[in-house]
Amino acid sequence: MGKIKMTTPLVEMDGDEMTRILWGMIKEKLILPFVDLKTEYYDLGLLNRNATKDQVTVDAANATRRLGVAVKCATITPNRQRMEEYPELTEMWKSPNGTIRAILDGTAFRAPIVLPCIRPVVKNWEKPITIARHAYGDMYKAVDMTTEEPGTATLTFQGESGAEKTVHVQTVKGPAVWQSQHNLESSIRAFARSCFQYALSQKQDLWFSTKDTIAKVYDGEFKRIFEEEYERHYRVEFEKLGITYFYTLIDDAVARVVRSKGGFIWALKNYDGDVMSDMVAAAFGSLAMMTSVLVSPDGTMEFEASHGTVTRHYYRYLKGEKTSTNPIATIFAWSGALKRRGELDQLAELVRFGQRLEDASLETLESGVMTGDLLSLVEPGFQARSVDSGEFLDAIAARLA
Ligand code: NAP
Ligand code: MG
Image (cartoon, rainbow, N blue to C red; front, side, top):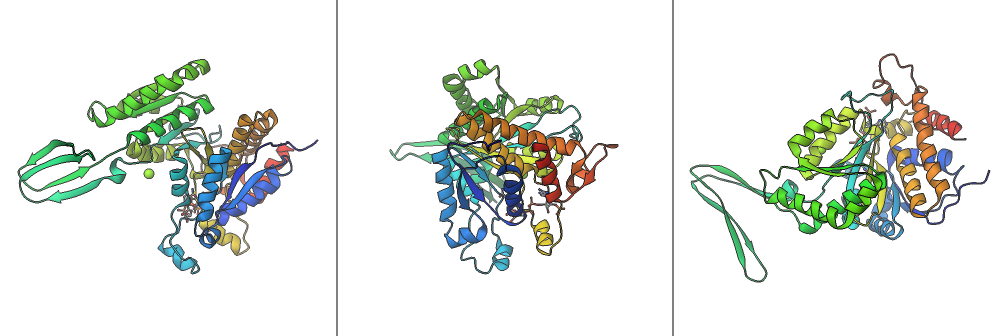
């Protein structure tokens, strides 16, 4: 049987530590034997980012804009401790994900990989709940201050035209604390478009929630822009696919989400998304089973695992020990990217391969062969044994073949 052909390359961003080791193994055991793989390769490993003064990250992001699909390995974001660990670093390079997100103007969608032998803490969740978190502004770009004496605060905007707009914030009788937040119409609109695009690509309902009954102007703007985008650009396609866009108050959304069966995308403002994504991740089980997709307003997609480079396992690996590091989220990054590439290039074979890769991975887990991290999560009575990463990938490869 010949290998599956590709027409357009995908952008491949290599990374660091244990996930870089898994990356090589996944390609060797699960992809290259079956696919005539075409990639544009960028080494985002820390040392190459340093050697290129981080230009490689910018190049990889620009290539993603050009080619439309990327797959990324987890990477080290250097901090002070890393500067000591790697004395050759000439700078504390910024988070590659931050750089890529800014260039793609993208929104990150985080989805758990679910299977019957690992039940979510919320019993009625049967399908994944994908969280889309707006990544700009609000509390994260706010200014704060405290004051000691009685007095009045106002908020003033000075237009470049010279026009001014002022609102009275509050008059206080004693010490007080203050905060001022903003967001950008363009950023909210890009967020909305990424959400509608991703819902269409996943053929899933999109929920959006804010607190517009209280923040009538601020959250009201979010609600208005989403509605406007939906009516103008997406309603027809949503109706064709039989999916819905559903807006509700955040408190109502939380109650509905907990009672739901899952299987939808939940878009949230920056802070709400920060909190809810950790809640949903914890309830579904494990960071090693979370995928993440960065989506641009034009539908460009970059796929990756949600977890980091699994440093502790890497140091055991360097000592020659076998590690039982879970490759599932990284495999799903590859399968997601291959499926998307296949969809864009109308290569049904490639789409089918991506799906078979996911099915073979989940069937392997369901057969009771898994990495150590999952053993404590399986349902009582489920017979499972822990294997190292290489054996686990071999078991998936055997099913694929
Ligand atoms: P991490 O790499 O996600 O690992 C934290 C712990 O979670 C691990 O020590 C391990 O626990 C468990 N874990 C995570 N993924 C696993 C997997 N696939 N299989 C088995 N266990 C897994 O987070 P971190 O240690 O905070 O960060 C390490 C580095 O990753 C940092 O340099 C950070 O900058 C980077 N990072 C990158 C990204 C990204 O590129 N998207 C995201 C987050 C962090 P046990 O050790 O208990 O087994
Ligand atoms: Mg958080």
